[in-house]
Image (cartoon, rainbow, N blue to C red; front, side, top):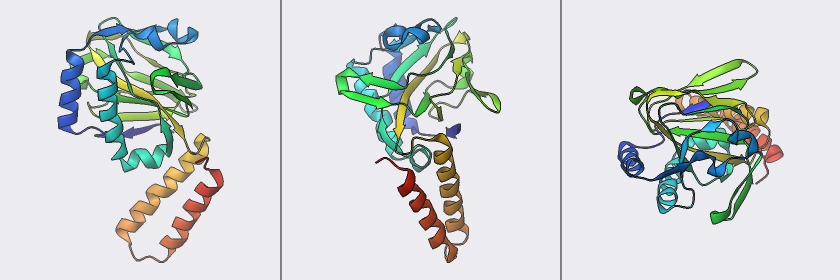
Length: 226
């Protein structure tokens, strides 16, 4: 499942992140790359153990905790501490697949990566290129979202970032270990949850809602690894 989550950050949070990142010191993005990714990656990154990364990561995590759409889609068990990258002119990230296990030594986090997330921090008009391209069974999907919005996609997907030809693309990126490991099962639960929400809004007294909610929770009970 590939899903756009709009307006994860409110305007005040976005402005604060952009101001801090605008004054930050960037390091080689391969600081957190494995062998495969290092061959394809040319970008800059905020040092993951820096005070800025920790502070801004907490802002992102707090914003995620408010997003019902994110929770319904990801069913998060654990979220990797958010990282931040920058693509200036000529920078790119070729085809790659994210590592199955990520370790964040400073936070003592080790987790399975079920979902990848990119939270866009630069307005799309501020840069040319820099599209996130995600491949799945239905083809290649191009993603370039408004600042403050996020895309979720399976970490097992082949994906890349096209070369930036003007301006700079700044984003936060991180991974999620879901309570439901299987993408097809997560997608089914998400679709069911979205339909329950719509039915509750349009027909709040429909007696069938109790049965549908029961089906959702019984499937979650069957598949979840809490």
